[in-house]
Image 1 (cartoon, rainbow, N blue to C red):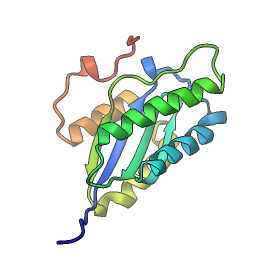
Image 2: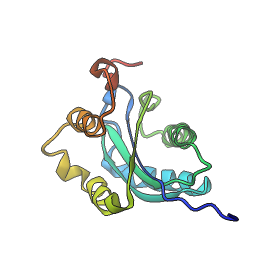
Image 3: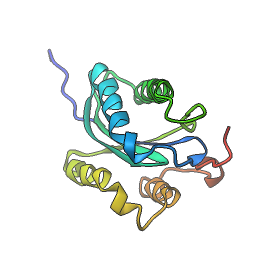
Image 4: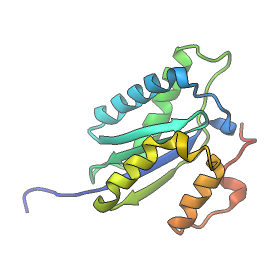
Length: 154
């Protein structure tokens, strides 16, 4: 076979260090646009991006030769530098260590897309920690709550 065909959809979730509410609404769109450029520059396809002041959701179509860990590392490193270069905060911004990455089938794309775009509505009923633990349980991911959402992380 001469070509490679794939359909890999990944929902990525990660939080602001110590889950602080630092991603102000006034700059969220600028941050999302910057992250979109990072994803595009890596040859990947952004499907949806959104979040709240303390975390972010990114839904991508990933090519089979690209590792999720490399994409998340590049997004976190570059967006951290971008946010700090803007001097929006009187201290250095950082993302919390780790992330969640969950695969979805093509039939779930629209549902995940709307879920991500409706974060504000969703979080009026549920905290980020509740949401994240629910996703881990839904995907049967073994976890220790002590290490999942570390509010005291440096």
